[in-house]
Image 1 (cartoon, rainbow, N blue to C red):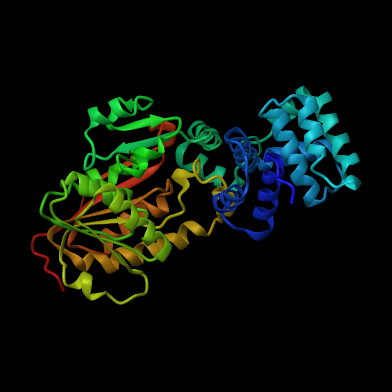
Image 2: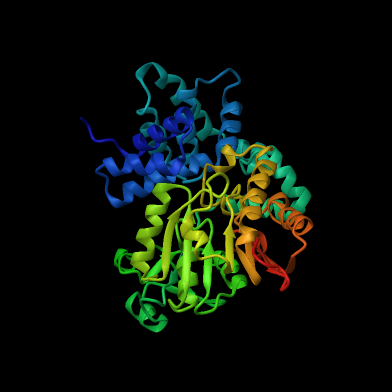
Length: 422
């Protein structure tokens, strides 16, 4: 069986994504795991696949400019790859056209060749026509999503957010002080660049595998620490990380309290829970105990009941993830307008189940990686309306267009002293 090229893998991934509705990351990682590509070719396959997904609307707009009649889906996928190479990667015209046309069956090659050749003859016209289109076309986002961001954040911030989402995400690592000191880490991994306002974080082009395997660092965006800092855990406390997988926040909490205390880390997905366990072992977070549990349906397990009430509870709630769209390339195409209210109902259900597990004067932190008010401020408001024993202490957020990191939200609530566990 012939070895697939980077372009063939990208095309296969696009078709699987379109037909099977699976997550983009799973599709491309599965294909690359079976391929025998050089490191540069693997990078090229990833760039093609993710680049096309980031720019679907714009690429399809150009296809419409080149051919008014209907274009078959399989042909469209090949044209998307070709146009992405021509207009975004600036691949040499001969290579982009010839190699892309060769991906198609012979009966389709004539029309694909003609359209790509036409694009090479009129690049200025196609670019000018694209610039005249609305923001959702230029930046390839669902129109409803762009409109709500314009309403919530203003036109300028919405445009900056859309452009941010289309850039490859930087790679950050949190130095794990349970395993290694900051100075030693920076000396051992000299390619790491420390972040001025986040001294225990580094930015790298690619993390050395031994740093990850030895638990010296954990891949994590600095925005994820907002919730843990609001939680403000103390050594010796009982802490519940209710929606913990894959474990970045659990590991950081263990570091903050120097492995002195007790952390119950729960998740409902068995595969993610296994990843959580492996991560805690690698990071040396010895006080973390993992437990499978679904807060929206399962009865309270005895392992949690026996530890409650907790001094602090972190609810990093399931959400639409709009703050990390830059990292989840196909997320924008899976979202629906109804998702924000649907997720809010699930978030409120989880919070209401967990409130009785909080001790008097205990701290509850509600957090998401969403930018949407329905999942953030409105959830907090509804919690306070239905739970008079709680009072809001502080809210913090990270906005990509302001802070230049992933989007995140966290609210710190405290249980009144007169409240007791039901």
